[in-house]
Length: 289
Image (cartoon, rainbow, N blue to C red; front, side, top):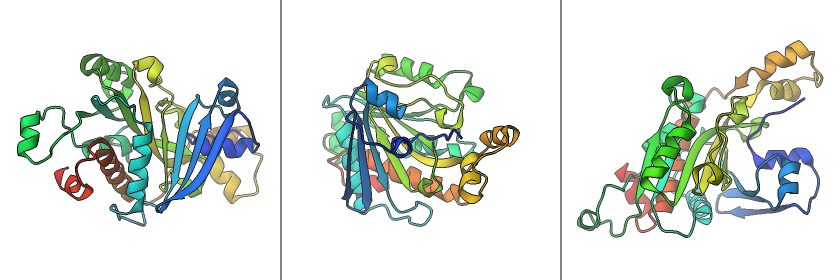
């Protein structure tokens, strides 16, 4: 059976072998268990089916069961984002990908709504407000191709060519192979993203090659392929082709998905705000947006 997943850590688990082409480091940071995977060359990219680059997977308590924001997870997430940001201190564009009208796919837009946009705030106003030095940040949501008639990559490329950001950060819902990772895992990568790839609806890729600037992709798995459910909950490891095709057309989400999306979006937005505006405390950022 062919399992869909956007998570590099799951791709590695499925290969289940040591490779000199892939570096792996695991450690605990605050309240999160972190796995860093770096695909070092083209051979490693072929082995894992992922582009070369760095993938950080943080496994944390389920968003549906814990609404706490100001704890070690925030620190761990903020530090991980900063490690992926380029050294250039220029504007950053945060793009929320997905369809806000479909709850499991609403993570990106809802995260973007919580971003502290600062590009329009000049230094005099920032000083008057007591913010000190602010990094220029823009945030945008797009909808999906069926709503707008435009590829997300086309829209982002136009914005990049206008504001010339130092980096683009995309936020999107992901697909996982394991039920145990839904709503309790965050993946960060400096390789960009192919929106919709985890649910078999791939759109134009967003990365440094297509946009001309570094692209950091952040996501939380919110859905799992129905084929995985059959494998995990029954003894039917081999399915008739008709049943397998039907199962592959279905993606399943937890019943508490609305709570998961709301809390995950708030957590990601605060983490991004803290990473992009290090001079402002998390408590103050919570009150701004």
